[in-house]
Amino acid sequence: MKYRQWRLILAISLLISSVLLYLFDYAVFKDPHEILTFMLGRSLPASRSSPGDTGHRQAPEVHGEAQPFGEAEHGDWGFLCRGGTDLLASLSDTDPEIEGIRSNLQVTSGWSGEEFSRVARNLAEYSFQVDISRVDLEHLHIILSQERDFFLRLIENPALMEHESFTDLLLAIFHLTEELARRPSFEDLPRSDLAHLKIDIERTYGRLAREWLEYMKSLKTSYPYLFHLGLRTNPFDQTASVVVMEKGGKD
Image 1 (spheres, helix red, strand yellow):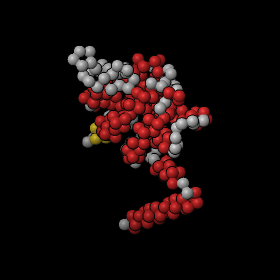
Image 2 (spheres, helix red, strand yellow):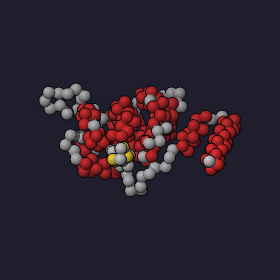
Image 3 (cartoon, one colour):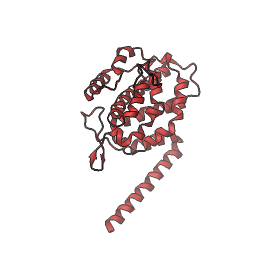
Image 4 (tube, one colour):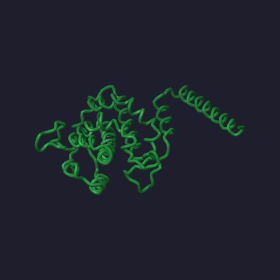
C-alpha cells in the first residue's frame, strides 16, 4: 500500500512539474505550436517493430488469437477511406515518374500475399516525387485542414502509435498540415519555400502510398467487401470507378 502511495505521489509531482515547465516555456517563448509539437513527440510510445520489420505490423491479440492489424483496428484507418485515396490520386497525378510503377499498383482480387510483398519491395525502392508546379497547394491545404482534428485523435491512440510506419505517416501528414496552415497565401511563394513544401509533400506522398498498399492487403484478408470497394477506388488506377458495371467492372 505504501509503495502504491509513493508511486501516486511521484506521478502527481512529475505531472505538476511538467505543467509548470510548459507554462514557463509559454511565458518565455509565446509559441503554443512548438509546445504542442514537443508534447506530442514526447508522448509517442517507442515502436515495437524490429529494424528488419519494414511495413509489416505486429498482430494484436484478440481473445487469445493473433488478428491482422487492419481487422482489429480498421476503424482507425479512416483517413484512407475519408480522404486518403483522393489525396493519393491527386498527388500521383503530379508524379513525373508514376507511369513507371502504375501497372504494379493495379491491385486485383487474385493477388496473393507474395504479390503484395513483391509490390511492397518495389515501393520501398521507388523515389516518390511531385512536380510542385502542378500541385494545387490551396486544395491540398483545404483537404488536410478539414481532417486536422481527426489526425490528432489518431496520434492520441496508443495502439496505433506502437506501429512505426503508421506513426511516421501520421507525423508527416500532421507536419504538412501545419506547414500549409501557417501560410496566409500560396501565391507568389519563393522557389526556396516551394522546394521546402515539395519535400514535405513527397514525404507524405510516399508514406501514404506504402500504407495504402498495406491497407489493401489487410482488407483482402479481413474485410472482403471493403477490399472490393478499395479495388473500385484505386487511386493509381485511372480507369477505376466506384460504379459496379455489369461486365468488365472491378469487383
